[in-house]
Image (tube, rainbow, N blue to C red):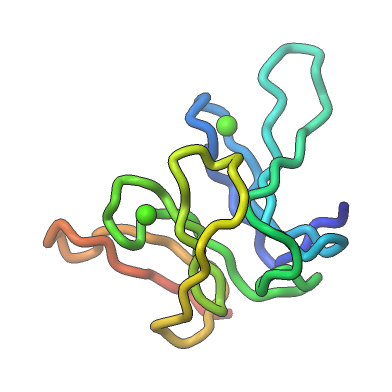
Length: 127
Ligand SMILES: [Ca+2]
Ligand SMILES: [Ca+2]
């Protein structure tokens, strides 16, 4: 495994209260998340794939990755420059559905309700 993406995201992917690393794996060309060690003395992270192999956004310097509920189904999704992957209830399950982009490419990506209308918006910071 080799971490891909220009700016991996630090998010709690499994809800255990510890930040994990969301990034691409340039070897298998898949989006993965590295589970933070949950026990004292345990210093090895686990890579848990979120999708099938050879997907976009997994080159060494792919630009931008984000995590948030894009389609408001209550399940967080992975956002990349090329589009977004629809998350599953079990985010360790593979073959997330890919959806094409709706915006211009950017670097850091956030999914949040910017204007308070109850709908999540995509927020991009370009560098
Ligand atoms: Ca976690
Ligand atoms: Ca969702």
